[in-house]
Amino acid sequence: MPVTSAPSFDIERVLASIDTMAAQKPVAAQVVSAANSDDASARELSRILASDVALAGRVMKLANSAYFGMRGRVTSLQFAVTVVGFTTVRTMATVALTDLDDESRLPEDFWTVTTTLALTASTLATRFGERPADALCLGLLAQLGAALLHHDDPEGYGELVAAQPTAAGRRAAEVRRYGISAVRLTAVALETWGFPHSMVAPMQRMDDPASVEGGLLRVCFEAAARLTQPGYEPLPIGPLSCGRLRDEDLPPVLYQVRAEAEELRRAILGD
Image (cartoon, rainbow, N blue to C red; front, top):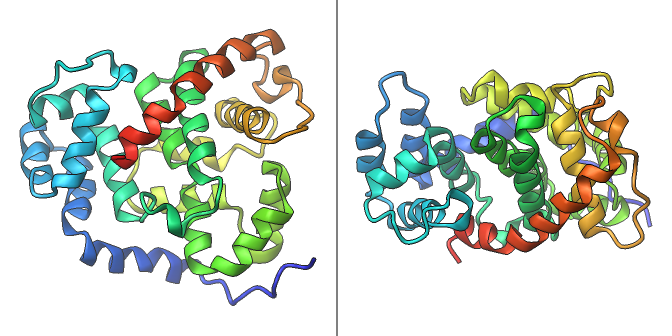
C-alpha cells in the first residue's frame, strides 16, 4: 500500500515549532538553555528543575536507578544533577520539551528502540572512546528527528514506519519523502540547540561506513533491530563498527540491554 503523498516539508518550520513547545514548557526550555551555559552549576540547574515537579522527579528517579549504581542514595535534587551530569539533565529536558515523553504522539516502536539504542551506546561507549553517560544521551536522542517528522506528518510517517521495518530502509524512505533522514534531522536539531559536537557528529556520519564516529550508532541500530524485529537477518558487526567490535561481542550486550531497558524507560518517562 503506497504511503500518502508527502506534505511540503520545511525543516525551518519544524525546528521553529520547538519555540511553540518551549512556550508551553518554560522550565524544560530554561533547563536546556542553562545547561548549555559556561556558568552552569548543579545548584542553579537544580533550582530551575525544582519548578517542574514531573521533570525533577524523573531526574531523581534516573539518578537512583541501577544505571548509575546509586539506588536509594540520592535524596536531593542538586545531588541528582551531579550524579547524572549536565548533559543528561539537558537530554531529559529536551525529551520533555519535544514531547518525546508523550507516547501517543510517537511512532509505535519509539521507546522500545530508543532504550535499546541508549543502553547499547552506553555499554559499548569506551570501545569507541566515548564516556558512557554521554553515549547514553546520544542513544536517547538519536530518534528525536523521527519524533519531529511524526509530529509534522503523523499519518504519512506512521505509514512509512509500518512499510519499512528496518532502520536502513526507513532512512532511505525518509530521504525520498522529506529530503532528509530522521537521524540527520536529529543532528540539525541538536546543533541548532547548542549540543556539543560529540553528540552531533555520530548522527551526521552514521551512514558513512568508513566513519568511526558513526560506528557506535550503527552498532546500536543493529542491536535494536536484533532485539525488536522478528526474523531480522543480522549484519556483521566488524564492518559496522570499523573493526572496533567482533560478532561475539554483541550477544552479552543484548542480554544486558534486554534486562535493563524497561527500568530505563520508566525512569526517563516517569512511569
